[in-house]
Image 1 (cartoon, one colour):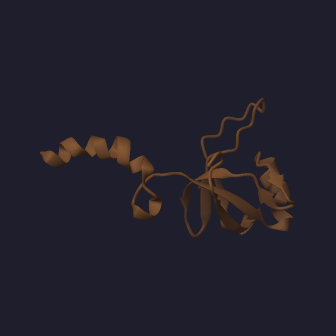
Image 2 (image 1 turned 30 degrees about the vertical axis):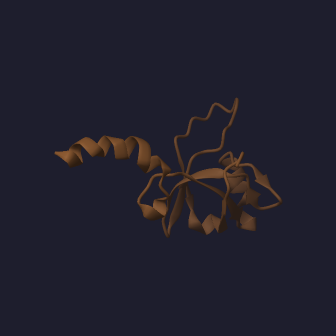
Length: 103
């Protein structure tokens, strides 16, 4: 019974603060280094690419060996309403884990 009463406290207050490494749901900010021949594909999905091949920071939801699931970048006035975007690993050379803006 104690477990059931503590579950909502964990889910609402502790889970969002814990790193995914420790079983939490804290979102990570990443920049992706895109393969040079795939920059056009990433731009077409609405990502901002700076420094030739590096995207601006986005929130990482899930990372697997085959793909990255990220929150879409903010696109004001584009009419697109994606909830998440799955990026194949073969489009990306590397992933940079960055500090969130404002920290």
